[in-house]
Length: 125
Image 1 (cartoon, rainbow, N blue to C red):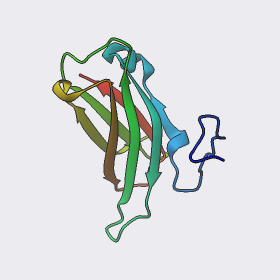
Image 2: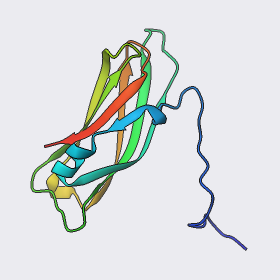
Image 3: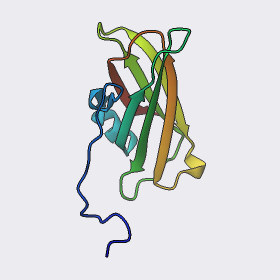
Image 4: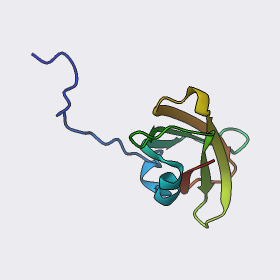
């Protein structure tokens, strides 16, 4: 009898019109320079509110390379573009070196004045 999810359980991908996860672009060269990997990414938008802004929520995990610790603070930034390639939003999450233990979940939310179509996600120090 199964009591929980097995590590061999099938992966079920959730996709709908509000799921922007397939349109998230990681900057792997910048991840390598900072000694981290951004994974487990999920990006979802909500309907526009009465001010015409669309809420965008991005969840991810940041893990360091084996044996790598942060010697200074790390920032994860998301830049959001519309279908024409114009920047319509941005958000940043700080990861402080003193409290970092090799794995950290991040939760970023921003509001966009135009419909988000593509997201670039990258670390910097």
